[in-house]
Image 1 (spheres, one colour):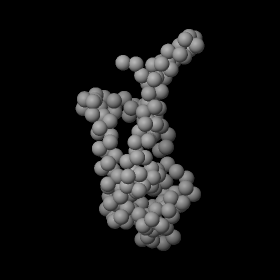
Image 2 (image 1 turned 60 degrees about the vertical axis):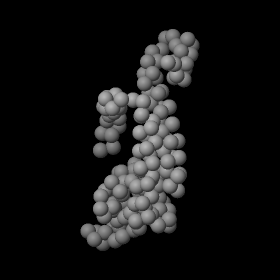
Image 3 (image 1 turned 180 degrees about the vertical axis):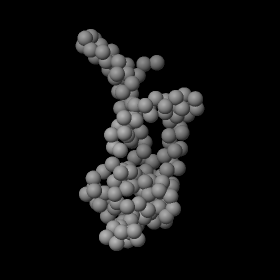
Image 4 (image 1 turned 90 degrees about the vertical axis):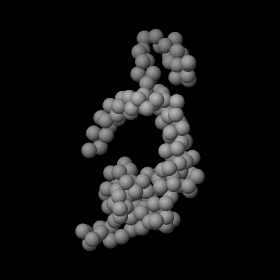
Length: 165
């Protein structure tokens, strides 16, 4: 069964037979899938009144475990944004009552960002919807194939993850 990437590759092979376009067979599909997933994620989050960036911050705090708090520095590492961007995001989430700033007992000058009950409820509901969407997307792929795809994608992503550490 042919897809849009097959048509693009056919055109490139016709126009530039001197190029090996085989990497595009995988990476163009990954890129297209990423765009579709971004849209689906945005829709799942929008249902719960969240934007993708809001979900990312709330999810980082939720994954931290009770009492669902992190320093701004840890949040930066979890969400891969600049400190100025994070300050703005925390300000906006605080204004919405989804997080709060608390003094850091280990550092008198520092603060901790903590998930509120409303923030926890929002991220939990959005996560449940996201997983339902993702399960539906993967529904036609066997569990064994899903595991293999995850292993292959891990190999592709790992060098980028190592760069940030």
